[in-house]
Length: 155
Image (cartoon, rainbow, N blue to C red; front, side, top):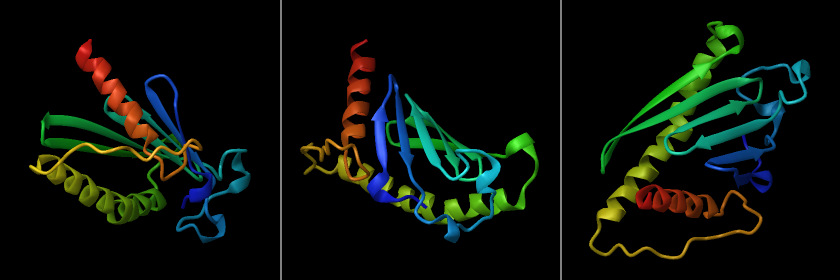
């Protein structure tokens, strides 16, 4: 869905704002009216420190993530999908399944792999990849979250 070369992540207070242009709206897996409003074809996401985010997909589909840490190695994630007026939508239900089977499934494996690596006796924190353009391959958002964590621990 996203056009990687336009992906931008910007810290704003204790929030990370993600924006991008969509790759090709003609090949979307669900229909929507581009003329419904000026932002109907955009994707935006906001991560709100410490454990909540929401994404607005093209066509004004909203989803949320809420993470709850159980302990240092376990987390529970709640997802919500919302439509305008709260109307039941087969399209949104299908989009939720598609997202779970693609993006979320991939993310779960990546996060679990990172967690295993952090427990490794050989783990040593290394330098982050910091792109001044704040693009999709930059880890500046990781650096910002590490700073928020230090501030929270230091009180």
